[in-house]
Image (cartoon, rainbow, N blue to C red; front, side, top):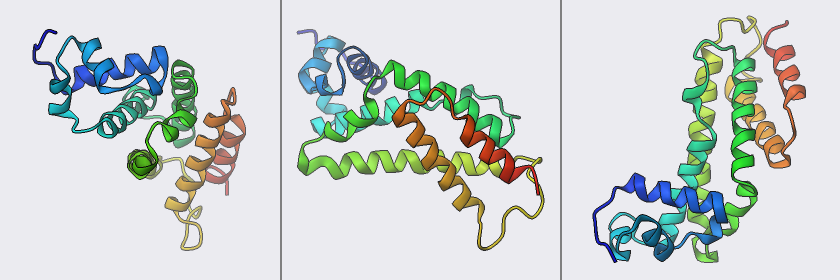
Length: 186
């Protein structure tokens, strides 16, 4: 086997390709090493265990599905949610069953690691959405107060957003209408 050195990202790219073509269950150290043309030990230099490899792959797929950088920076919060939903829906079509498969891709002793990766990425996404909400100048005055915070609103939007993605709903128009009615009219 060729023992050329490769990068962490090249290994993750190979993992993402395996996930696209065969699903997350196909990811293991030997298959990834073969896909990269490297020795198994080279994979272990970057990922100490299969669980670490799968966790990093799941995070990489999340980042690939939810690409905030593709979204127009001046979009309103509602427009941002609509654009991200369209991008994410395309991502879920590229990675069929990803939302349900990644939770079962870990051995039972490693499930907490998988959940932690997902929760960490979700926290990053919620923080990005909160920042977008805070930057939206069109939000009506008086919408938020102590009993209805921006953070609670973002959590509400995000949980419904993910639910719609899991169902692979063709659009999130009802959610967008709720957002518009809450944020832009008082």
